[in-house]
Image (cartoon, rainbow over all chains, first blue to last red; front, side):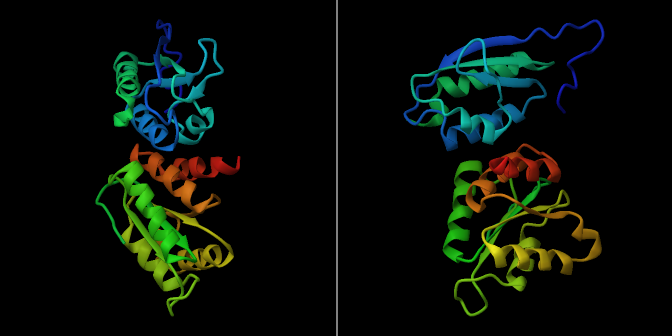
Length: 104
Length: 133
């Protein structure tokens, strides 16, 4: 699945980027991490997140890696998305963060 | 014991304590949802702390999926009894059941998360084992 669309001839994989502030109380702990990775896995695009615009980048489809980021409430989550459905993928993960993962 | 019909990899939780096994299964259901076949077993045949092969076989049957089953275990006997249970499975199923080298609670949640996204058995196992990586 990884990099399936990374180097198609004639197509430059320019990543889409955006950021969102974590509003839910617990930050990116276990349950939100699971929700985020489940959401990310629904897309073919490569989805990465980071606490700073310059990285380091974490695979948003790996629950273990996402939990290790330990992003607290108020942190800005940066996303970098590459792939055919990157627009929809970015919109979906941003919506999830804005919505506080459906939590308080 | 609870299961769910889907083509996703099944998850089996094996603990010496039925309370731990059931509690871990509750966490999986609440955090990951019901898109993953799931079963738990714990305790010896007399109801004490321990594990038993028959219970593990039953749990594998309950959580069975054509995509295979990932087994999460706690200590010693849970692992050896699970391996024994796998050996007792029909040959065509044996290769599709793996015992993960991962912490039972965390591993179950992560394995189920991976499975809920439709990942194959090898990816489910790898993801659960990332905890020790």
